[in-house]
Amino acid sequence: MEEAAAKPELAAVKTWLLDTGPLVAYLDARDPAHTAVASCLDEFTGQLATTSAVITEAMHFISGSQAGPIVLAEFVAATGTRVYDLSQSNELLQAALLMQKYGDTPMDFADATLVLLAEGLNVHQILTLDRRGFSTYRTRRRKHLKLVLDAS
Image 1: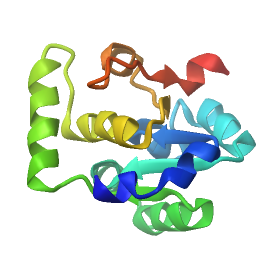
Image 2: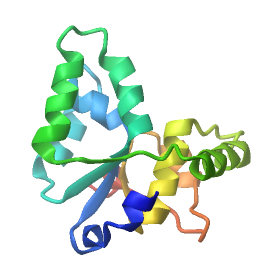
Image 3: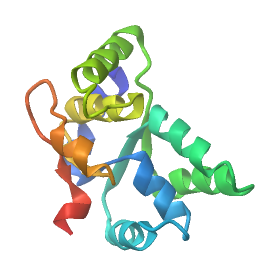
């Protein structure tokens, strides 16, 4: 999370956290959420931020298409999406504790890293399809996350 704390300029720019579902939906025109996500992302002019866990999950889901991984990599590059690696031992422990806390929702590792990133960047708008999870999750400061698709 050191990298996230070292990037205070993100606060001045409208920033959205990016979850796996919308990323995959945007890249796959056959996805039922593609139109809503594409409309939302195509109009967005701010900064996208995500975690390496989200990228790993998205790579897995789009790997069925031969061009999928390249399209994902090109998307990240073209949009300037900032990808944060939250895999240091203290971050892994914090993520595991969040996963345990929200075990009944449930929360996976990628979700936990996004909650940690929200706190680290002080960014609380998230582009996600996981309404149940992200309307429940809170940062350690008890901040809730605003679901971008619900606001559109």
